[in-house]
Image (cartoon, chains in turn orange, cyan):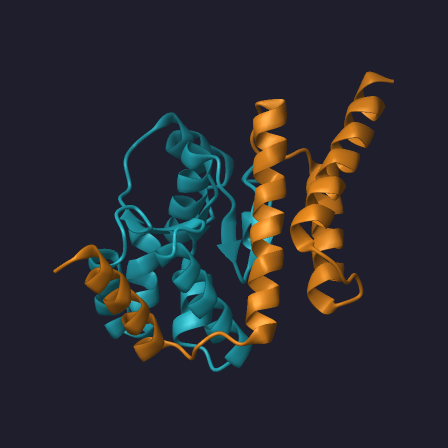
Length: 96
Length: 130
């Protein structure tokens, strides 16, 4: 089987078992990916896993606002900025 | 690279549960993984636990692993590591599916995707709750 045929078969298998995604699912997963990318950025920047508790808590709050629509806008950009801000706050607190 | 560790609770919510948005969200996650997005890792003990709720889940997941691009969707085995020893000492009541998910998260530096975030309290892993 070719890679393209495999690819199409894999998508068909998902659709056979689960309902196709809708706009709400697309938004929820876009936020999830942005949240995961923010955690990965913190991991790569600090060299530590998991994220500091205060950073993780801040990212959870921002992610929830994005999912519920309280915070409109691009999830990737907003979560990335939230990670930068939360890590800076964490590091300044730790240094004090 | 972004990778998610899917635990048994997330699998059951997406593949067995009746909540529509859980099913549609898992569908989007799987489609994204097939299309080169974040990869999905399912610990074998989470899969076996989910299969108790619906035996066909194991076949569905195996079909997807076999059809998706290499490493897009994977089932991970349990191996004794320092992470496993530490988790068993730290959280002896966690249960094997969650222990396996947490170990895989620690090994890969990935978050656990779950519908039961509280059970990972004290494990020292990143959690993404659905």
